[in-house]
Image 1: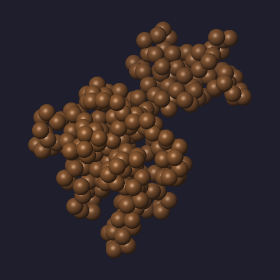
Image 2: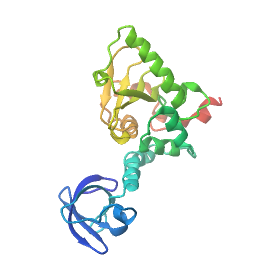
Image 3: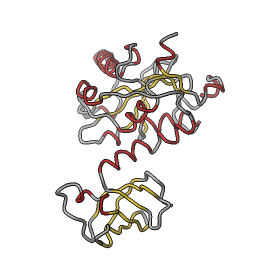
Image 4: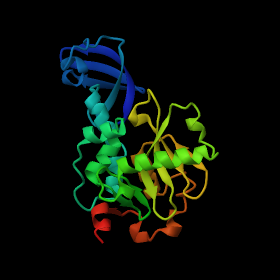
Length: 263
């Protein structure tokens, strides 16, 4: 079964004036003319046998409707796990509007679309009473994305200079760690593993324990990591016993920075 927001490698099986028939993961589908890049740019029109990346827009249609537009693929990536997270943990109010170009320029990287969606929906704050989501322009530098990126780079450089082992994922010397989350009390830091040539949506989440040298890596997005922690399905050693330390009322609650920092 196909699902909305599912991303697939597709093969063009037929072309008509109104769009393109495709085959994806054992299923037939259709890309409307305006949902192929050639409608909007100088990209060549689709021909039989073309292979491309596409995303499911509406799995209930017959045949299911797909899009090969990069903008739709980015939107789908941002919604894949943020939508179920919102259902599990409804935001208490409006999120944040952020000038992302300035933030990304300060960091020197493009940020994942699902993270931007999280900030747009929730803003920065505390999930399940234990996991802080860093945000740009937070008045407290402890929970500010840009400030923590600079601070953690200095801290890690000092640790490694003192002889602490780097995680194996950094041994090629070209990868970079950028923090996006922080575990209250325990001090665990959640990073994106940023590697040259790897799209932000494909970054790995990597955790450094707060009071030791151990690391955990997860090939998931930050929104999927948050969803699994809150749903109790995570395989992370550091969050599997969350019910033992979190008040049941906080298990699926989000508290925004604005509320916490004003107290």
